[in-house]
Image (tube, rainbow, N blue to C red; front, side):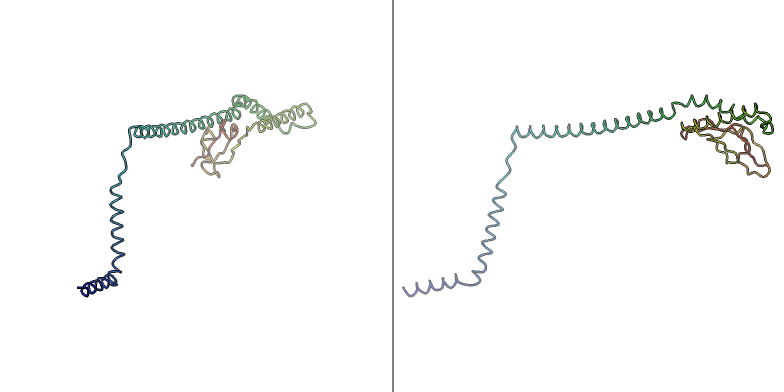
Length: 213
């Protein structure tokens, strides 16, 4: 009987010491550990939020939406204010530049009269033999030159488009006539010069335009 017990113990020890059993043991342990961890994860569920937490979340969402809406309105108000500022500044600048427009138009008639007066004096009569006429003519010329300097100082520029291409935005055609040796569509005669105030057309030049025969 004792011999049989010794034999059984030896067989059991050989089975436990078998390499196949030793190699498979870690796999069995890992599988068991994974099953245990997965089982633990499924068993642990997130608790339901309380009524106070739900109310807090809802209030937080509402406040975020209100903040987004107020921010959008604020940005729109800033953009509108900037546009208004730019328009107001442009109106102020235009008023500074073109505020004298009406006054300049009235002075243009004076400049036209001076120009016609100097052109009407016969050049043959301007001599030392006729000192009174010469002095009067020189005074008119000096006055005309001075008034043109004042015009240029305030941005008023004289336009004499003789020989240029007709531009309906700057010129006003008084008549059309075929003229030999000149290209159709060009200006042949300027009956009254035009003026621009800071690049804006103040008075169009009155012209005669060449047309095709």
